[in-house]
Image (tube, rainbow, N blue to C red; front, side, top):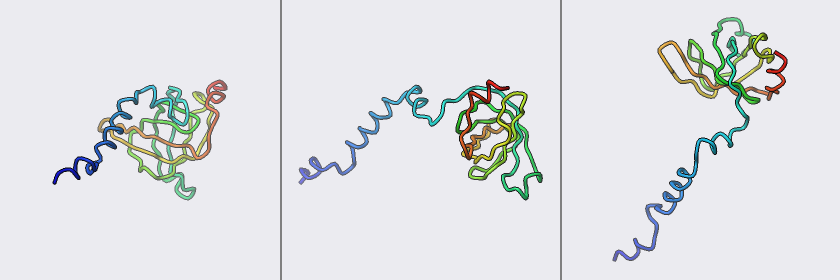
Length: 135
């Protein structure tokens, strides 16, 4: 009567154990190695504006980067922005030579009541090493 339950993996236990082994083998170093781009810790001022050209100067929020990579940046802003929306990022040239870039917000989370951590993905890759060297 219970023989069919012993042979069949109805609950997916073998899949769950395999997933658990995968999770256990993942470390912070493995996670960092899988990132699309290496991150450089740099604190550069930036201004975030709507990506739509007709609304570009309707509003803006100032912030500072926590890290920057060839593919994007993480910034701390005083107001939240909507994940999925496109923005125009203007970086302070005295700190990093990136100029202005189009980017999409990937995530936004509240760190404190007046501080939001925002992850942006640049619409086109940049050469972060030359941007740092030339500043």
